[in-house]
Amino acid sequence: MKTSVGKVFIAANIIYILLIAAFAFLWKHGSFDADPVSEIRAENRFSQTLTVVADNDYRPYSFINEEGSPDGHDAELAAELANRLGMNLRLTLTGWSEALEMMENGKADIIMGIEMLVDDKAHSFISATVPISSDSLTVFSRKPFGDTFSLNGLTMAELENNEGREEVLRSCGVRDVRHTAYPTYQEAVKAVSEGKNDFVVMRYVTGMQILKETGVKNVRPSLALTGNYMCFGIDPANEELMAVVNAELERMFSDGTLKKLNEKWLESIVSGQPLKGVFAYYPWLYFAAGAMALFYLFLLNLLLTEKNRQKILARSMRRDSNYQRALFYGSYAFVECNITQNTVEGEYSEINNGVPVPAGYKLGIRPPYSFTELFEWWYDKLYIGSEPFLEPEGIRERLLARFEEGQRLLTLTCSARNPSMEIRHQQISLHLSRDNSSKDIIGLCIIKDVTKEEKERTSMEINQKLSRALARNYMKVFYINLPNNSVALADGSITAYPAAFREYVTETADPDDLPKLMRLDSTEGIEAALKEKDSAVIMFKNKDKKYCSLRMVRTGENEHTVVMGFAERDREAKGITEGK
Image (cartoon, rainbow, N blue to C red):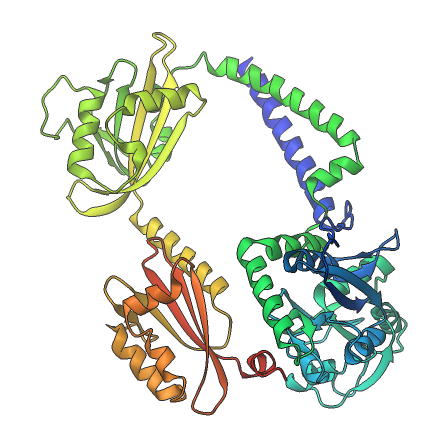
């Protein structure tokens, strides 16, 4: 019975894994894709009106849906912006050239679909707001290109009145390219597909959406040129509107509205349709999943019934030395206890090469040993940390309650002293089981030193936070320990933070901007700048009169570490700061 049920259960698991893998493959590769729809609508109950224009065929940012209404990421964001500003929304989607003409003639307040560093320089009547999303400008072609220099001498299909693409190509070392303008990106992609042009430069998300809609198979993304930001465009003379729009967009960034819209509209083209939507489109999946779940539960019940006839986990481990070696690998001690009876059944044992060796209790307490007495000793003598669950008061009750809730393995990591009284990170794994003979709850506590693993995990978390928090091309990065008022330099040395900071900013910053930077030369200045946020950005000019940014990000597990980065942002900042 045991062997047959186990084999069937394993076979069922393999089948389920294969089915789930096939479903995930189809899901992630767009087999169940469905376009998102706008959920935020303009209230249009106010006295003032905000006139917004955009391209009518620029999925997923702005387009006309099947009902003939404006839709897309930017359209939904514009509705939310108008509601927050207390203004009615007049949204007009037309050709890109017509949209630019309306903006130039003062017939619109905002134009959507502006690319920072490109459109705001190509059109003097447009100044970009703060970014609302990011994506890479990508070369789409029939054949792949190894580098940007391979584009010289070729022909590029481009959108009418989109001169900014040529500036991007020049910045990437491409000087000799012939251009053919088309009214829409769909026509540009078709021209590349038919061999009339060699390539087209589009935002990655837009290009993938067009390939999906048109069914073009011989054009694919082949070369990423540069990262870029999408923004709204406003007349630089309309400083009041620019200020209120930027303020609301920053609030949307802080409260997560922009993140939700970006995930909904921009990531869905890559990640596919939400699982709930797949089941809505294919109701038979409910029946299939239900039937699989019932069969799985039936097999699981048979297996658990068989398992209940076996010995409890702790006694089984003592008889099976190979299993003990696997379970105790990397551990240095374990304790067996009866939590129900509040007793300790086995000796405190040390692990020698994966094999438990009884060491007797060397804990400074006399028998009989109770579980609570042993735990209180360990907590008082060895424990260093603040894990609430490990408080000795009521520990038995908490463990019994967890067992009744269905938890059979509890794992906690904390700071404690090892047998040599060194402060280390320890992982405490408590395996809970019911003794068939007495119905008592038996516990096996395994103690493992995980100092190395914790250091690697913390280092990985910090590196991940840094990579997300700091953009590329940072000229100087300080890793500041606030409690010690120290800074780690690039060569690995540690020095006093104020001195290193003053030396760097004095050498680089323009004298006029130096005072506002010098407010950050102390721990108190950094805390004041961050306040309740985890990051802050300060713009300044260097001695060459170029715009730079100083960005601070609070990181690390204890929130007492700040990373400070300096980067040149002249091209990005001029359009925003000077309105050019």
